[in-house]
Image 1 (spheres, rainbow, N blue to C red):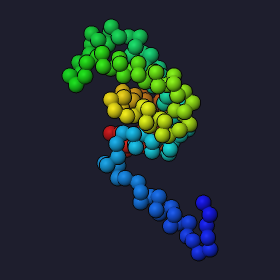
Image 2 (tube, rainbow, N blue to C red; image 1 turned 45 degrees about the vertical axis):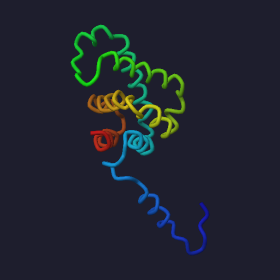
Image 3 (cartoon, rainbow, N blue to C red; image 1 turned 90 degrees about the horizontal axis):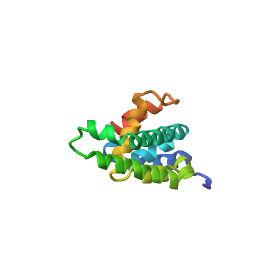
Image 4 (cartoon, rainbow, N blue to C red; image 1 turned 180 degrees about the horizontal axis):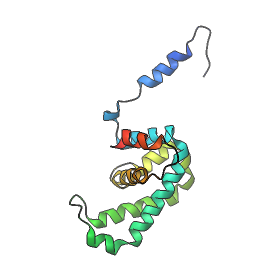
Length: 143
């Protein structure tokens, strides 16, 4: 950014803020992108938890199927979402950490957001986060 004589850097900052949508108008991808941008240091830990959760789900299919009582989705769909998330994590291992766009676009788009939002809220409910700002940010954006 090049500032010319008489330009006001605060004006440039104000323009960027004005472009942000209200929270109630943001979709899951936009919220995830914002979360990653604001609290990037927590993302590697969350991704580690997400990987553990997918492993647990896929290794315990029989027990989960027996107790499944979600009327909105079949257990097989839950398993498929876990498999798709594992494939994404294998395909973009470094980019998910580094890029808010890759993190949000790959993990929070479409039906995958059902699984990743569940993982995100469970992650903070179990107090696994290291940054104390992460939990209120997740609650603000995703609940």
